[in-house]
Length: 240
Image (tube, rainbow, N blue to C red):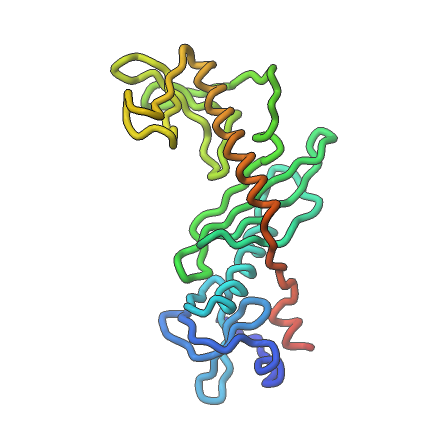
């Protein structure tokens, strides 16, 4: 909860009137363009931070989620500075954004994803996915490894869109190499149970699997329209 104030005119003209929960209680108030919630206790105006808000109102919820995601995005370390970014895209209880960076004189596309609690602007996880790297089809690609505690190996230069590092193993009854978390597999020796002759072959198989998922993500992103972040702060709104 903050001490920033809005004028009555700002609340009535800019706010989304709805019920929302914050700080352990239901509020009958407004959600402002910067995602903050506003309520009154007597004559005192109460303002609530976006990430503390839960509401069944779709318009209010997206405002608070975008604001919370924007704070997380601007405070995240990508390992390199991004140059520009697209608007946020809704994906069920998540927000997704494409942004761009220059790496080794190449412009790369990164996909930043924030997953939220159901009906809330409180976030659960955030991930960054290098879409450009995942789409690459370099025949000379060489996997790199580290040991996995259950046997087998992490493939340290493969990461999927959920931020998970690649992992392959031959610690199965038949001794064959497999992708450990292969979404196509329902059970061993059943349809979708892909096996490989070597660790390198399994690693390349997982890179190919991630590439296919990246292609699907690329198509999905191209067909979506985004939600622009409101960069105006509570204090700036109050001063307007």
